[in-house]
Amino acid sequence: MRHRLNLMLIAVSAALSACAVNLPQPEPAQLAPQEKNWQASSPSAARLAEQKEWWQSWNDPVLDTLLNAAQQANPTLEFAQARIREARAKAYSAKSYLWPTVGATAAGTRSKNGLLESGKMSNDGSVGLDANWEIDLWGGIRIATQSILADMAAREVEWHDAQVSIAAETANAYVALRAYQAMADIVAADLESRNRSLQLTIDKERVGLASPVDVALSDASSADATAQLIEMNEGIAMSIKALVALTGLSELEVRAQINQGERQLPQPLGFAITALPADVITQRHDVRIEAEKVKIAAADVGIAKVAKLPSLSLFGAISIGRQETGSLELNGTSWSFGPTLKLPIFNAGRLQSEQEAAQARYEQALAMYQQKVRFAVREVEQNMVQLDSSNQRVAATLRSVAGYQKQQDASNAMWKAGSASLFDLEISRRFLLSAQTKQISLQREQLALWISLYKAVGGEWPQAASEQK
Image (cartoon, rainbow, N blue to C red):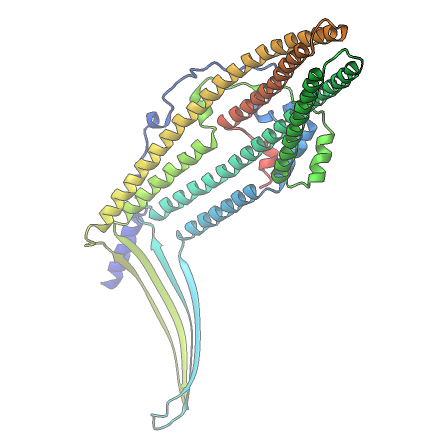
C-alpha cells in the first residue's frame, strides 16, 4: 500500500511539473511611447556620423586617449562589474534548486558507561548518504530563476550605462578645457593689445597728447583683461583636475596629453536620429532597466501564487553502521525513501496578502516604466529643441563677431590717427571680446548638447570595449 502511495505521488508530481502559474503580462500599448513620431525637428550638423562610431568620428587623438583611459580603471565601472558578478552567481545558485541535493555523513564515537555492570568500552561508527529533492510542481523555482536572470540583465545594462556616462562626462570635461583654452588665448591676445595701448597712452601723456584720465582708463582696461585671463586659467586648471579624476591618469600625464592637441574646440559633429521614438527609447539604458524591473515584479507575483499551492519533496537516505562493545559486534544497513506533500491550509490570509502586495509592486513597476518612457521622450525632444536653437544662435554670433572685428579694426586705426578717442576704442574692444567669448561659450554649449543627446538616445560604447568585462 505504501509503495502504491509513493508511486502515485511521484506520478502526480511528474504530471504537475509541466504546469506553471500565469505571470502578469503588460499590453504592448502600455510599453510603447504615446508619441509615434518626434514633434521636434531633427538636429542638423555640418558633419554627421554613425552613432556607434561617434567618438572616433571626432578625429581627436587626445580625446580618444582620455576616453580609453577613463574606461580602463574606473571605480564606477568596477562597482558595476561587481554587481554583474553578484547577479550571475545568484542566477547559478537559483538554477541549482532544480536538482536534488546530496550530502554525505560520517560519524564515530568511543565511549564508556560506568553505570553498566560490564563497564566496557564501546565503539560506534556510521557512514551514510542522504538526498533531498523539492519538485518544481508549479514552476516556482523557474520563475525565481527568471527573476534573478532579469536582475542580472539589469546589472549588465547598468554597466553599459556607466560606460556611456563616463564617456560623456570625460568628453564634457575635455570640451570645457578646450573652451577655456580658446577663450584664454583670445583674452591673452586682447590683454597684449590693451597693454600696448596703455604704454602708448603713457607715452602720449608725457608729451601732452593724452590726459591722466586716459591713462587711468587704459590701465583699468588692462587690469580687467588680466582678471579675465586669471579666470580662464582657473577654468583650465579645474577641467584638468576633472580629467585626472575621470581617467585615473596622473596630472602630468593628462597635461602631456592635452599639450599634444590644439587649443581650440573640436568641430561640431552630429549623428542621425531614428524617426520613430519607440526605436530610440528602447535603446536607453534607464528604460531597459525599468523593463527588467517589470519582469522581476511579475516573477514575484508568480512566486507569491506558488506559495499558496501544494509543494512536494522527495527524501532518501542510506546509512551503514557498526557497533563494538567488548566481544559484541553489530553491523547493519538502514535506508529510507519517501515523498512529503505539504498543503497550506490556514495562514490567516497571509499568503493572499503577500500575493496582493506582489501584484501591487508589479503595477508600480509598470507605472515607473511608463513614466521613464515619458521622461525619456521629453528629454530627447528638449535636447533637439535646444540644439536647433543653439545652431541658430551660433550662426548669429559668428556674424556678430565678424561685425565687431571690423569695428575694432577701424576704431584702432582711427585712434592711432588721432581721429577717435580712447573711450571709443575701449567700447569697440569690449563689444568684440564679449562677442568672441560668447561665440566660444555657445559652441561649447552646442557640443555639450550633442553629448547630452547622445546619452538621451541610449548612447553606445564601442563593442570591443564592452567585451572586456
